[in-house]
Image (tube, rainbow, N blue to C red; front, side, top):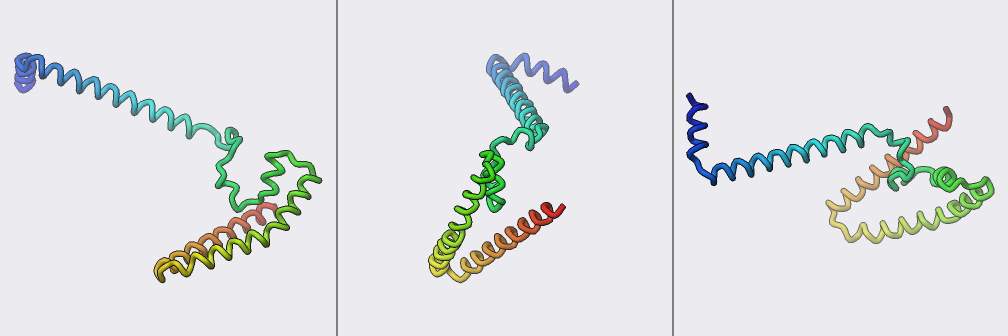
Length: 143
């Protein structure tokens, strides 16, 4: 009986109700199509092998890694070029470290005690992560 009353009400509602129903249906169809397209895009993206398609890796993937190996692989450096680049990095390393320490020594006094604690925790976490990555690299090299 309920279905009968819905049909009667739909017929007697007039053009305003029909227009509203048609608008809602078209919105539902558009939304459904957008969801299907989004799902398909995500599925295709996840199905691809990132190692095979990642010619230009995210810059953060190499941060803290062995830059010489990365440059050798990407630029196809000769052994002579690799040695020269290694010398440049070795020469710059103390300067870069001194610059970092200088920057950090200027920032820390500006911070409140609570901020200094967070700052120290962030530095410790970064150092721990750097050490862990270094240990992993060493373990892989030994294999």
